[in-house]
Amino acid sequence: MSREIHPAVVGAQPFQTAERGQFDGPIFKTKEGRLRLEMALTRYPDKRAALLPILHFVQEKKGWIETSDMEEVAEALEVTPAYVHSIVSFYTMYNQHPVGKHLIQVCTNISCHLNKGDEVLECFLEETDTRQGEISSDGEFTVIEAECLGACGFATVVQVNDRYLEGVTPENVSNILDELRAGSHKR
Amino acid sequence: MSFPYVHELETRTLLSEYQGKKDARTLKSWRDEGGYQRVRKAIDMSPDTITDVVKESGLRGRGGAGFPTGLKWSFMPKEDGKPHYLCCNADESEPGAFKDREIIRWTPHLLIEGCLIGARAIGAEHVYIYVRGEFFEDTQHLNKAVVEAYEAGFVGSNIMGSTWSCDITIHTGAGAYIAGEETGLMNSLMGNRAEPWAKPPFPAQAGAFGMPTTVNNVETLSTVPGIIEHGSEWYRQWGSEKSPGTKLWSCSGHLVRPGNYEIALGVPLRDIIFDVCGGTPSGKPVKAVIPGGSSTAFLSAAELDCATTYEGMQEVGSSLGTASPIVMDEDTDIVRAMRRIAQFYAHESCGQCVQCREGTSWIVRILQKIESGDGRLRDIDTLYDLCEQMTGRTICVLADSVVFPLKSSLDKFRAEYEAKMTSDKVAVG
Ligand SMILES: Cc1cc2nc3c(=O)[nH]c(=O)nc-3n(C[C@H](O)[C@H](O)[C@H](O)COP(=O)(O)O)c2cc1C
Ligand code: SF4
Ligand code: FES
Image 1 (spheres, each protein chain N blue to C red):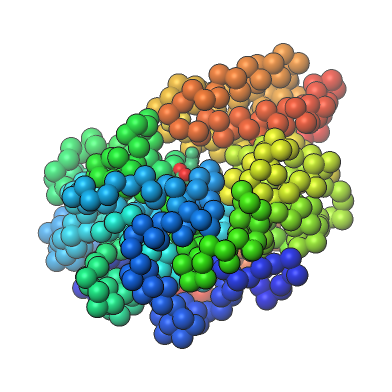
Image 2 (cartoon, each protein chain N blue to C red):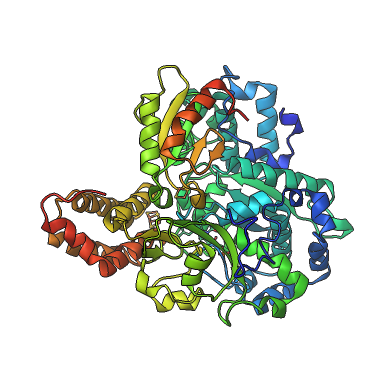
């Protein structure tokens, strides 16, 4: 619950969680949404600075950000919907489309590339029978290629929603998927 | 992976002593180890004295550019009546670098101490710690530590019963390498796209929210408490005159023991790669090393005796950068590796400058062409030409960042590029 979140860290909550779809309808009409917005606003001298924290909140609750959300956020922060859209599309972590329950991001940047990152990505795509960005037919997975995840010494690094898996090899992939399906990989 | 294994070249005094020790994350243990006494000490010092001590220590910024930290702090205006801000740069996304994440997840209180002391020195009333959005789990440790510090009265109003007040807010990014560039970071903090701006105005004049601001890296700030505790002479027992102290080395690529190691500046790069990290897993010779993260120049195997100092790296035409050697063994396809690196910069270019936006994607296309065996010798000239066009002409140095590895790989491994052109079908390996 938001109430327990200290204002200093309100903008730093995990926003790619497996629990999705908790929100239908206007975000800031709910108590939690209003509280988060108010708390975020206390931390900056300027209203617009709450934009990223608030978009994080939307994505935390819905898993992605759609046009109507952008309009709502724009109104709340007194900017134009087009401006909010330019922000959402600039940053790679905002999902502009729905994604599978487990968003799997495989780093193929240089250190992972040197340690079979490309093969790991191929394995994930093959085993989920998807192309990049698609949702698998069972709704469980979306796989995409990621740029360096900042854990290069532990290649290949794979981010699943809000957690990191390190040292992933092509051989690990089907196990990881099984565990994710079974829910035993949940935080 | 650097713990519990400790190599004799490691100096685990300043930054890494508590890495791998979970207990150190809690405020209680941190205080038991003497934590926050350095903040106490800093509160009793005048801001100018803190800045002077850091100046004398010779500490240089660990975010990549190596700018002297004390000097940067001294640029902040004094008694101008405006709010000042400190931004802690925890956006770590330079390929090869993963040291700041380690500091955040093992010793969040060390970073908070560093932020407070830095804030005191520059008269900041608010510290924003800008953490890259992907670091969810690590950020939770930092969040917990900040809340604990607030509750203990170490952050907020009248810190430790003094008249000094300072807030800390954790702000997470949303996926953009360019948000690590200092003006891009401040734009992002303000709720804008993370587009860098042309200086002036410099951050110390008009930074975040138009106010005097200093941007410092996580490792830089985390080094400060030790310097305040023990003094600048103590810090200078390590390293060289121009590159004092210890540094976290993020070692990756083809290595037996990749990981983070705190090592006094100045040891030969070769020792880090072969002694500390155990050389290549294949046992094959090293072909190339990018010593400071992917935006620094390639070194060939013959150049590995260079000293790991800012000046030592410069002597061999590269730079210390974020001290993140990426090691490639003999079987590495340099053209392919370079193409992957270039792809990153093309993806991360914010698009404001033509040279960068167009140049990075042209480089990728030409490298792909060479990689697939369709290259011509004149493509190499075109690449050199692009390097020329992209150096020193853009708002930020992202464009230059791809030139360093590209140009050096052309200079030092030209034969590999040419080999892909002479034969008709070269296996991509
Ligand atoms: C494209 C680009 C990306 C950067 N990324 C980072 C980063 O992720 N973390 C960081 O600390 N500095 C980064 N920097 C350097 C910052 O601009 C800035 O110099 C640094 O944070 C200053 O801190 P320092 O003086 O403590 O090193 C980057 C610079 C550029 C040009
Ligand atoms: S050099 Fe590239 S990243 Fe930097 S401001 Fe220009 S376009 Fe953006
Ligand atoms: S290159 Fe994969 S995490 Fe950095």
